[in-house]
Image 1 (cartoon, rainbow, N blue to C red):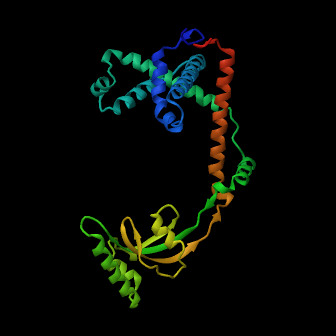
Image 2: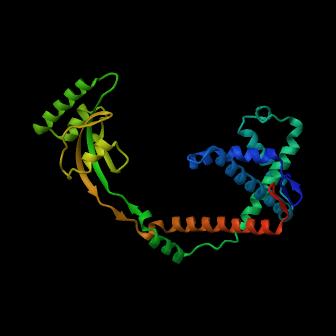
Image 3: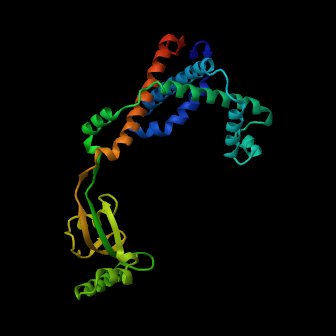
Length: 289
């Protein structure tokens, strides 16, 4: 038996299209799930999504009586612009000029649904400072500045132009000049394969540079110069200038971001509750019924 929502039959093609839309992310999330179970779950989720979409369309047609023609025309123009012009649009979408009014009618429905969804979500109360502060206190681990180090480096790359033996000999020569007292910054600009600004890399946290380089730099005290470091890029010598410990981000700096996050959660929840209510009071016939 086909799926029906208040008498409106859902075509299998609609469910299959939704399955293909969800498939890339679904397969990534549930890659360890047996293939047969994947397909079954994906079909169920896709069916529910299409049911909810139809419910929103039905609600929107009752709730949003008119959509300005200018809004529909603008939506169509923006859609066409993605393809270049109307000819390319019709060719790419396998439609014809005589389908234009049908396409515009579908766009009008989409606009209605968007307006209806916004109307539903606006019923959600915006969180205040107290709610934001509570979230901040309960999730402090999300609001920290990680340990950072400011360092400079001199690098000799190993690549098609320079083999490993040559690069190693070159960095050894740089090391000798450093030991003789020549300024690090001067040597960086003269000999590094990444010259400029004295080799300064600025501040960076763990995970931004290659691990072999970071392991040494984060273990070096400010003012010290490292021994030669070998990485997948070649050979480095680094100078550490400053370190910043892990610090908490002050509430005032993240308050607006937290409020927006909580508000988005509330709006989403309001829409989910609305759809649950619509399902309860609607005549929905599923394949399993």
